[in-house]
Image (cartoon, rainbow over all chains, first blue to last red; front, side):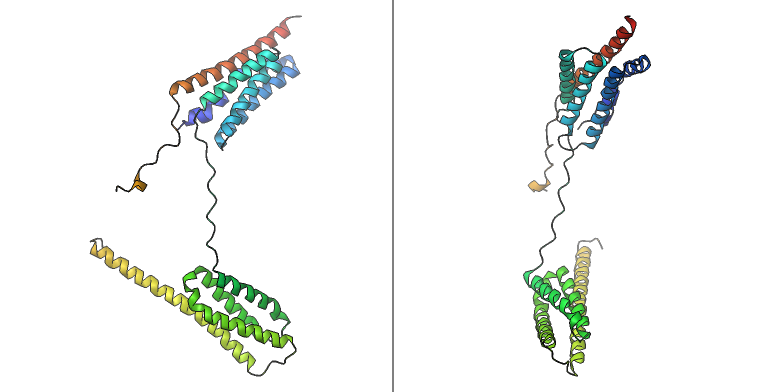
Length: 239
Length: 50
C-alpha cells in the first residue's frame, strides 16, 4: 500500500523547479517558452488528479503525463532540441513508472446482483392481467377495474413471496379465466346481467382476502422464528 | 475456525522493494529539476545575449 504522501502530494511538488522559469518567461515576454512552462505545470497536476482518481490504468496515464510535461518543458520552455526533450521525457516517464510500481488501483465495484427471476406462472399471470387491464376501460362494467387492481396487488405480493405462488395459483387462474371470459362476452356485445357486479365485487374481495392471508402467514412465520430464536438464545445462556 | 474460508486473504500483489520506489523518486525529481533549470537558463541566456 502506497502512502498518501507518495500518492497525492509528490507529483504537485515536481512542478516547483519550473516556477522560476515560468515567472522569468512571463516577465521577459517569451510566449512560447511560457506556454511550455505552463503546460509543464498543468500536466503534473493532471497526473495528480489521475493518481487520486485511481482507476485501473491511471498510473500509466499519469506516467505518460509526467513524461509529456518534462518533454514539453525541455522542447518549448528551454528550447533544448528534440533529443534532450525525448531523453528527459523518458526519464520522467520511467521515474513515475518506478515510483508507482505495484500501486493499488481502485477496482470498480462489481455491478449489483440481478434481482431473482420472477417465477414463470407469475409472469404468465402478469401478462394476462396486463392484457385484461388494457381492455377494461372499453367495457361497460367499471367493477372489473377493481378486480384487476386487486389481482395486481396479489401478483405484486407474490413476487416478493415466490414460495407462496403454488398456493395462490389456482385462485389466480380461476379469476383470470373468469375475467377473460366475461370480457370476451361483453366485447362481443353482451349486456351485463344483474348479478355481474355482485360477482365482480366478490372476486375483488376474494383477491383482497388472499393478500390478507399471505400477510398473516408471513407474520405467523416471523412470530415462530422469533420464538425459536429466543428459546435458543436462552438455552445458550444469553437470554 | 479451521475453515479455509476464514483464512486471511493474501495481498493482491507483493509490494515492490523500497529501492525501486526511491530510484523512481530521484529519477522523476531529478528529471524535473533538470528540465526546470534548463528552462530557466535558456530564458536567462535568451534575454541576456543581445
